[in-house]
Figure (cartoon, rainbow, N blue to C red):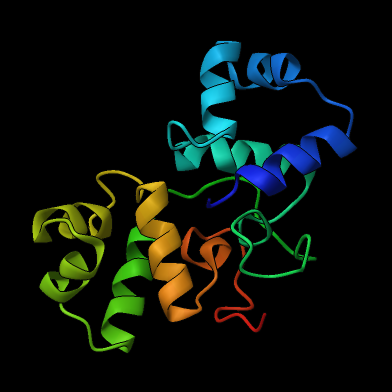
Length: 152
């Protein structure tokens, strides 16, 4: 499980129902329930909205850190940053698009699409990169500038 346990816990601590959160996201309650139980993977855009709503980091939801939130975070997603940071990360770690694609069990064209900001990285791919390389999801998405790498 990537985020389901923490997401449910945060929602319940804040006394918010699945119905209310699904309305806030503009979703059907059944769809949100499937996201929360990870029967269907929640898209990054919804995870960011939820993190902003509850003032928590994606790293916390992904169980990459015990830090609930970072002091300075950008709640507005700049769609240019994730691709640029993914490419910088890949080069810093001497990874080719092909080798990163192989790690994620996808194609080079998907990695290229992320790096050219054609679309946001898929939640499972983001989680895999962050878990394997100990890099912050919030950093890769441009929500924070520091820390880049995590100490759990």
